[in-house]
Image 1 (cartoon, rainbow, N blue to C red):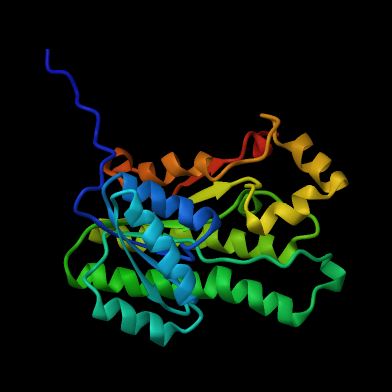
Image 2: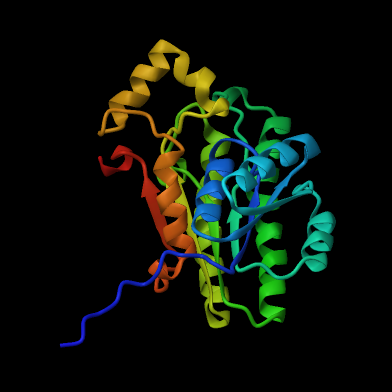
Length: 254
């Protein structure tokens, strides 16, 4: 009897781009991909942050470089992508949140959140995909979404709308890019303890609410997402596209 062989989780020789990769979730995902053997490029606006993050990744023996790119500028994105060798993997991670009740949300807050979470993610994916297609290269695009792309989140209307849009974008890009061998999936975390969330999660009432919804009884850690991103990037998920990998401790289960 011939035993089936588990597809590999290794990413040796593959080039990966992580946007917003110098801190929090993005940096942890970059570390996971480096550990799996990928050569990782980080994008962020701060040169100092890029230097610090890439030095830390190289300190683990990994291959990492950084580029100062504003993902809100599609022309700058296209120039940077065209100047680089084509990527095998994109982690579309750059994002923001401006929590506010719906009736108090300003146009500025709406535009800022939608601009980064949706518009920028769309055009980064477009530029990377064009380059993959021109090089006849299959690959994996991973959009960092949220449980808020699956259920409504009170007090976070614009963020919720943006992540529902990311979920829709994931599905339609999966359909359009499948003929080129490019897979597109999303990763949907619950509340992860990072610099960005620490202040909100320290507020006792909100902390109690969040923990009451996470069935496993704890906040997420960036380490909880590291195996998930390697899975989505690797051959282990070769037949997976247009799907959402939910890492929410049971929040959306009911």
